[in-house]
Amino acid sequence: MDINEVTYPDLAFVDIETTGSHFDRDRITEIGIKTLASNQIQVWEQLINPQTFIPQNIQRLTGISPQMVENQPSFDQVAPELKRELEGKIFIAHNARFDYGFIKASFKRIGIDFKPKVLCTVKLSRLLFPEQPRHNLDTIINAHQLQVSARHRALGDADLLLQFWRVCESKFGKEKLNEVIHQLVGNPSLPPNIDKELIDSIPDAPGCYIFYGDNKTPLYIGKSISLRSRVMGHFQGALTQRKEMKLSLQIRDIDWIETSGELGALILESRLIKERMPSMNIKLRRSKDLCGWSLVQDESGVLMPTLVTHQQLAPGLQDNLYGLFYSKREAHSYLKAIAKKHHLCEALLGLEKRVEGKSCFGYQLKQCGGACLNLTPIALHNLQLKTVLELFKVQVWPYSGPIAIQEGGEMIVIDKWCYLGTAINQNELYELAESGDAEFDLDIYKIVKKALSGAYKKQVIHFSAQ
Image (cartoon, rainbow, N blue to C red; front, side):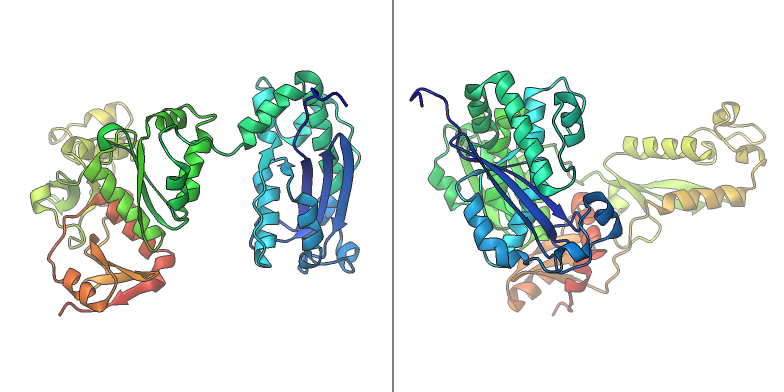
């Protein structure tokens, strides 16, 4: 062999068949691998007993029935051989997140850590054939006239990926493909001013990270349940995404704050962005000028939206409160929008002057149902307005006092939708509860409201301030 000939790392073209699309719930039924090493092809395939039901639609798609796998080994039985087969090779799959994710999850269930370098042929196709409108496997088969042997069977589809690689090799050459491997697979390029030791010290735990530029100026603040992985994701993205590249070039330092879980990270991120105003985040507005609508019935029985400004606003305590807006202008724009969408009368809503016996301007444009002329009963107009606004009603605080939300080893203390702080013991818990009212923050209200209506509902600790 010519010592100057370009060679690849060992490549494993992988495809799997499964009982469904969820890593946690579903299981692998077949694995097919075609390995390209030293210009030689090696083949490995195995049916696997998923030890669970195979849905009828999956059986029809793959042709793999329960009878075919009932006497086959389970994943844990083939895992050692599979690991040897994939070790030291670049893992290549179509929509690699799916195949790699399933195999990684299956290894993890039996205590094996599986972290190969991964190359996705969807990304490969997009990079080399940008003019193609689609990059699914059927499109690639048709575009490059690949020979189908067994579609939707693992080894048959793995062979298609090897064929596609050969097409790319023929069209672009081995040297170009080696560059592509480095671009799509190579370890994320660290920013020039960031040491690997700093990255290695970032925990793979929940929390917030802060990227700094020159003079410790905050560039970007983000949150993740896996800090190091998320930070590294920025640098991998810097190879292909303009925004990530710009960010990567400006970074001079990285800091992070750990939390006990996702809720703590969400709240911390919202607060840090408002406090530090990083240049590359979407600006989050402070809630100091918040306002909302309340409904007040006038002497003629019409429900009139009345603006409640910041001075009178008590979110969490007021039952008759709708919306929450950062400015009066935003509040009026919202009211005009729902009036047009639901054919409500702008005169009765107070958005234009009401003249007895005369129609509003919207009625002339067929954007009002005619309540201003009594063509629609006032009671019906009132009901329509309440029904529309109900979707935007500010929820009254549903507890008699402050609560704590248990997350890991911490307790997130909330009262009237306001974040009071995070406690790690009972003394801190009561200190925070007695510390007085915090300023209402609309973003934190949305975060907490969503958390309490979801998984965190069962994590609530009820207590009374001492």
